[in-house]
Image (cartoon, rainbow, N blue to C red; front, side):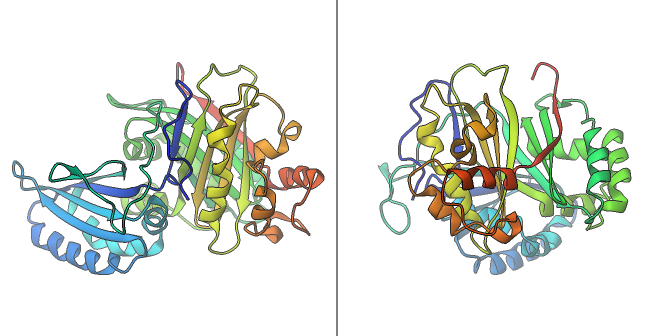
Length: 380
């Protein structure tokens, strides 16, 4: 079910979601290395054969620039964003695109929801028949993304000490890209780092991992990581950014002025195996109506998801325990019961499904993440 079939009604309110029912168009702009054209074509054919069996995939196109034959465009269409995101962040995807990456100098991925389509001057029906028109949403020019990884059990205190002193790189990336805000959270032995970027996310991440201040943090973290990485090596860095990617699947923010009292909080929701997307959709669902309430203490919500790990980040004027259902994203009738069937209660340390107000407070305490650092760029 789509989160909404109408455009947001609150002036200035930010609203974006991968759960709006739209098909997805994924675009990859590539610039080939000299002499790599045939290797690239062979790699593309192998990739198409493999991706054709991925659930949710519809079609692919390969286009070559008529002005510069070294520039190519790969597009693919998907039934919706969630199956694409599950595939593009998988180990299978890493292996599938490895031969293609070896042929290119640069590549830039872009993703778009398909809102309108015409054929022969008439609006075309989506494959499989008619569906409600996805809403045209409002943004603020900011890309929200997160990276997640785990550290060795027992090292959490040392890791918290290292990351609490984290100083992000300067905000300027290039003329079109700026790093606006970075927050770092810890949940058990899982680190989640959120980033907000104006411009090109890939350029911002590439810029950040090359900075000496980030390298210094990496050197300090290295003995504590569960999976080794070398951000100084381009291939290792690309693999890390794919494995750690936790894209924003939903975001809303109030159209009104922000409160100086608003604080950032994050909640980690481990889902039962294979239910991460359902859980992310559930906790995103109430935002379409809740943000219309002028008395709502929650000013902004961003939901990140990777596989069966869902993170809900909120900015609220009040302490979370004063409005637990709202902060948790479980205020709709029946939402708590539905969540009980999706959450991995054992991973949360809960001995029974949440069912009442007291259980909401317990869930809030067990899902709450520790904020280690929250850095804004000047004038962001």
